Every structure is written in structure tokens, then in C-alpha cells.
Length: 259
Image (cartoon, rainbow, N blue to C red; front, top):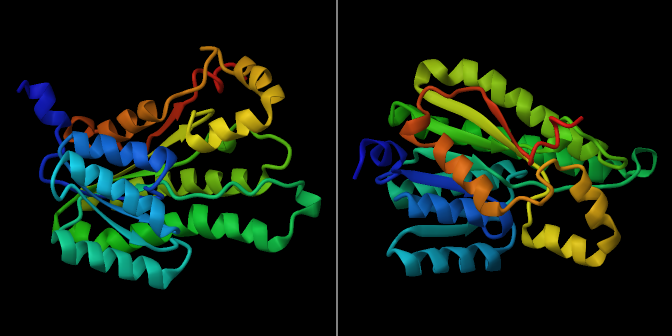
């Protein structure tokens, strides 16, 4: 194994991936396991995270463990992190991927939907980080990647709640990168757009008239693959990215550069 491979290895590391049962979360978990990590998956619905963990354990024995929980509920977060600590004995990596995209005209959006986007997308991210800090302190360091969105920079009608929550995620990322650096904890974010997850593909199938206009916003002329986001996340939590802190990585085929 080359020195570069060693720096990208996650062997011996334990990672939490929220929203890990489907889409980006599952792709991220698969890539972390491929790099040698063990992963703990959390999701609001038991079936997807349990299926994802089972598939990962078929690849490598004891590679994954799953639990059900809602990151917007403090009691769920506290329980989940305590269970991960008890199951794996340590936590080294946190990937905050769980999110909801509430879309509606702002003037007509019920407040509970707006609040839910905030509670999960930014509140859940902050709660998870706060909950893992004792484990990171015990390990004398850790790596956090928050999943943001192009919506923090490029907005569409009806996206107020989602854009506000993802803008807050990026602000939190920068603030904690500074605050937690003395503890050896790095905090970065990725901001994807038009990634061909199951949900995205389903939306394109339901609204085929949207595909061409959306592709036209992307200089590379295609949608992204979940694996491309997962590879970036795996790099950011690896020793190879040891001097990267407080960065927000756009992964959108050049869409924000074309604005």
C-alpha cells in the first residue's frame, strides 16, 4: 500500500452517518466502509437503515450497525450516540446528512413545515455535533462533514425553508471549524446539486419536462452520481485532508460558477 493509500484509509475508524438508509447517506456509508471504517447508520424509518446495514455487513462482517431515530428530537440523538459509543467503544467521524426539503410558496407555507426544515436540517446537525463532542474529546480529535446544498447559493421559488436551513448549516460549519480546531476536530461541508439519487430520479420520472432545463444549469451537462459526493466526503474525513478545515465544497458540475 502506498503512502497516499495510507492517508486515505479509514481502517479502525468509527463513523456515524445520519440519514444513512437511502440516497446520499447510503452511498457515503458504503464508501466509508470500502475505505475500512465501521459505520453507524441512523434514520427515521427502520427498514431502510436496517437494509443498508445488512448489505454492508454482507460485504464485511461487523461493518455496520443501524438504529432508528429523528435528529430533530434531543432524546433520540442522546440515545443514539450513547448506543453507538457502547457498541463500537469510540466515535471518530460524523456525517450529518439527514435532511428534509420542504418546498412551498413562502406566503402559503404552514409554519410547522418551515419549522420542521429548521429543526431537522440545522437543529439536527447542531444536536448531533454537540452529542458527539465528548467522544471526540476522548479520542483527542475527530472529523465532521455536514451535507449542505446549492440552495444556500442558488435558490428557486418555494425553497425558502430549505435555503434558510442550508445557509445556516454552512454558517455553523465555519463557526465550529474555528471553535473546535483547538480540540483537533475538523469541520467541513459539501454542497451538492442535481445528484441522481433515487428521490431525484423519481422526481425526474414524474416531471420529465424539468430534466432539460435543469441540465442546462450545469456546465458539465449531466447530473451527478451519489458516489461522486461520497468520495468527496470520504476524502474530507480521512487523514489525507488533515489540513482542510472550515471549507464548503461545491459539487454541482459548475452550476454555481455559471451564475
